[in-house]
Image (cartoon, rainbow, N blue to C red; front, top):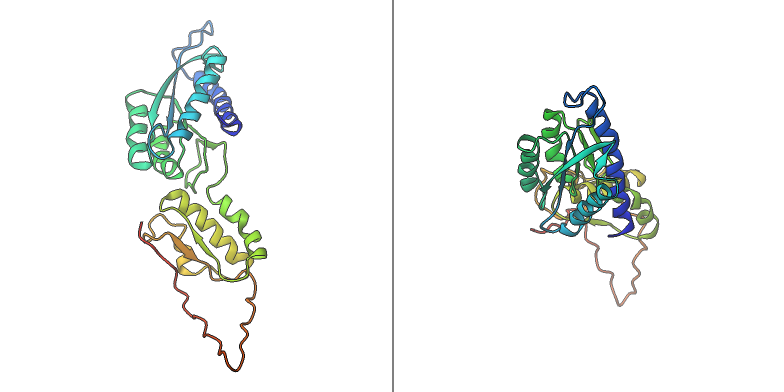
Length: 253
């Protein structure tokens, strides 16, 4: 397991220590002598599909933390319930629903994909179950009861925009995968790139950050990174006319 994923797993467990202590305050199963009751904690991660390696590392790291701490968080024995997030929301939602309704977890952690977070968060909010997420997260309308050990999903794209603006001479295309994480990263880049270029994003660029956008995997910004060098020509070799098309390149996935 990589050091980064180990640190994420420790951060998740540390957050749940505090969470578990908070849940125990109102737990009627704790007797007057202060005996610690068992808490059910849900772990949801990609244990199959594209990101199986990531989800498996997170689960193993979390289980290792529990093993090294007498299977307790905040002094309370933990009954860990595990669900398979799979490749995204279509499998994450039923797995989360089972953890909430059938297993009766009092807190949840893990989750690899931003799309899974966006789909599962409303379920947890309705059930008043807190979430400590482990990966890049999308914009959420309701952040009550949601914590994350990572960055916003749009941050990697927006953070590289200035470098591309300074180094690339000509039009820039941002290409990303056709799911929530791709929308967030491409949307972050196109928005920031257009802003530092002093222009507004094109309609195609704005659509990149929306899950409901048409299925396309590349978006063109409305700003050039720097003025293009003029084409040279001689009397015997006329210059080729440059294309004036501003439409975005698209491909079906």
